Amino acid sequence: MRLFRSRDLPGRWVGEDQDGALVHWPAEPGGWQRRTPYTGGKRQLEACEPALARGTGFPGAGRGRPPRQGTAATTFGVRATIDEITAWKHRAGEEHKKPTVWARDELNAAVTRPRSKSKP
Image 1 (cartoon, helix red, strand yellow):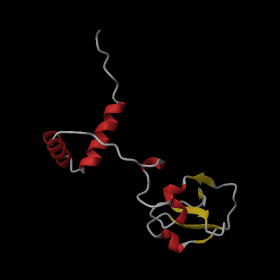
Image 2 (cartoon, one colour):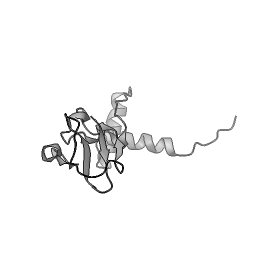
Image 3 (spheres, helix red, strand yellow):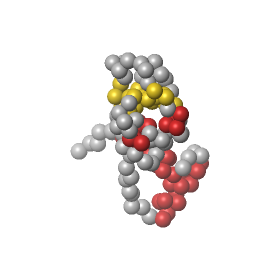
């Protein structure tokens, strides 16, 4: 099942149903239940990754949360001491963030900072 976007229908997905017919529905939780036939042109449709419509009920999207920034999500484990984890959770709480969100933000910021050149 394929998924598309249309500039003419902001806030809606266009996709194929089980029979291959094009339909459109709101890009919101449970939106697939309110799908209607798509009668627009096919040329202006932009193909998308089906996983982007997760949560709308689109059967071709798979299960789980929508991926961040259009890519499939995965987990990345870090081995840490109890003291490190406690400190990280405390710091995340100070910023009113969940620890996983805080850690992701910190790691992304570290990657984008320019590296200092060390003297040999």
